[in-house]
Image 1 (tube, rainbow, N blue to C red):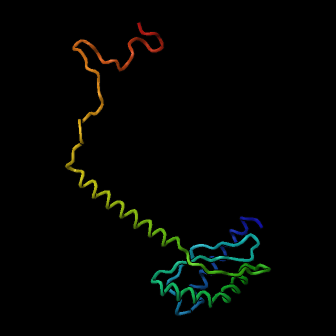
Image 2: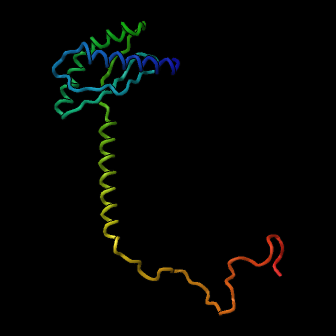
Image 3: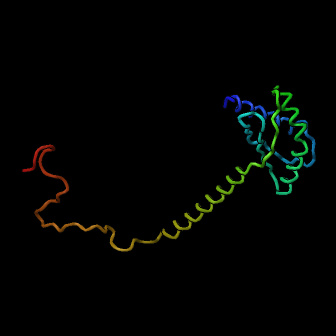
Length: 158
């Protein structure tokens, strides 16, 4: 199957499922749910709908049960609105991406706090050793440092 057609169908399924959850499914177990993504197999037989739930683990479990019980109604509406010969089976999967993103944000803020603590400790600190640790040749009063070759560029030095 064409990948572009499969992607368009997945987007349409995502819209239909989101509208169904918002307007027609009145299950009290259904929490504050957001449909984040939909993936469909190449043969258009199976669709996986990813969702997130704002709330506790108990609310996630209740929402999963509500979605599972409403799967048939949602699938029939998907079939009606997409007009496919074979309506794909729907599988609802909790999307771990927002939880992972929150965990990464927590780790980054912890690292930022540690960096600030280290910077605070280093405010009055001084370097161990000399300020310029590189050795330089000792010069007599008449000599110039030999950083650049004398003469013109491209001509040998005389």
